[in-house]
Structures are given as C-alpha cells and as structure tokens.
Image (cartoon, rainbow, N blue to C red):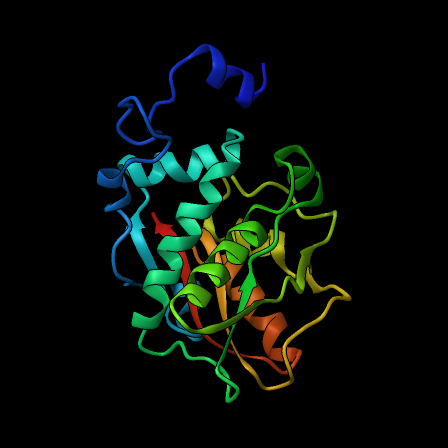
Length: 219
C-alpha cells in the first residue's frame, strides 16, 4: 500500500511522537537544533563536522522515515532545519559571490531507485530554498556518486566502512561550483565518518574547498 493511500485510510501521525495531525510536529522539529561538533578519527584531518541532533529519539525516527520508509515529504522540514543551522557553523561560508554551495553525500544507485531518488540531493534543494528565503544565495551541486561496487555500510565496522568506500566515491559529470569555491558537504548520519572522509578526499582532489560537513544526526 502506498504512502498516500495509507494517509487516506489512517490518520497522519508525527513520525517522531506519533501524535495525530501532522507528519512532523513543531515539538519534534525542535530536536534539530544548532550545530554540534562531531569528532571521529576518520575525519580528524579533514574539515570540521557538525550534527544537528544525536541519532536517537524523534530525530532518528525522522531520518529513518525519510530515508528508509518512503516519507519523502520530510525533505522540506529537514532541509529547512539544515538551512537554519548553516549560518551558525563557524567555518562554513558562501563563496565570494555570496552563493552557498551545497554538495550532498551520494547514495548507492540501486538504493536511490528504491527510495524514489537521491534523498540527500532532494534535502539539499530544500535547504537551498530555505537559505534563499532568508536572503542568501544558494546552489546545490550533486557532483558525487558511488560506484556500483560499493556495498551497504550497515553493520560494517570503521575499518570495513573505509575499505568499502575506498576508490568508490567519484565525481559525476554535472555542473559543479567554480574551482576553489568553498562548499559544504551535507549528510544524514555521521557514524564512523568514513563517508565524509571519502567525499572530502574526492572534492579536494577536484579543487573544491570543503569548509565543513553538516549532518542531520550523529551516532
């Protein structure tokens, strides 16, 4: 049964607190606050990383509902949460032209097809829209992809996650920021930091300056 059909049969409940009326209530939206530093050995030598919430409670439920359970409507409020937080990330900044360049972390192609598209790219676009409403220039550069050989990282330890991504994050032939532009890498969950580290490596080699990694949650 599709999500829309379920909504006709069952009352809409908040994915965080399960109360009726809204998919994501204002109380649960408060779980995503200001950026909190995240430290992991894998990203110790890279740009600073931040998360808006811990991977628990309503924040975790929202990420899972959006990422795994087909609640694509959550892209708007989750993107808005990132847009509110970005100007408060100390190292993040727009380019000389005032444009914030947002680079979403990539997903496996097969997984993206099953989820109805690249979830972080969709979220990044809503984030850019939120920044624009606040008077900032913003653009999304979905310039990263995962090679087909990359496996699902669930259950892998830090070393296995790093090995799984080694050489498998690559550039795709799409519009990208001007060379040397400052960019912010967006992700949903920071676990070991392996994804952020692999993305940072590829972006740096392409001439981008990754000023910060900003994720919805961190374990």
